[in-house]
Amino acid sequence: MKYQIKEYPAFKVMGYKTKVLTSNAFTEIPKIWEKAQEEGLIEKILAQHPNNCPAGILGIVSDGQWGANEEMNYIIGMTREVDTM
Image (cartoon, rainbow, N blue to C red; front, side, top):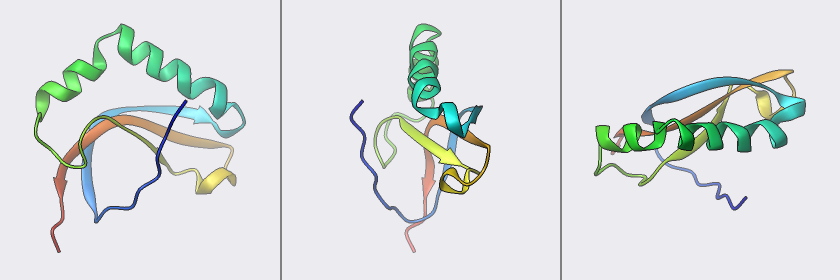
């Protein structure tokens, strides 16, 4: 899986959240993407706001303290608003 880590100003996200065991993240996250593709979730997300930046669908990890917690949230989504300040 190719991925990029980028920093942006604060932004709001719209998407689908799944709780993942941190220890299983490398096997579970690809399955989340497969399921999202099969169920048409990516198309549903893109249809909501077709011209947002950062562009495209994002995979976001939250509440995991970078591997220190047993669980984390994984969100497939896209931005709704980007702070310009």
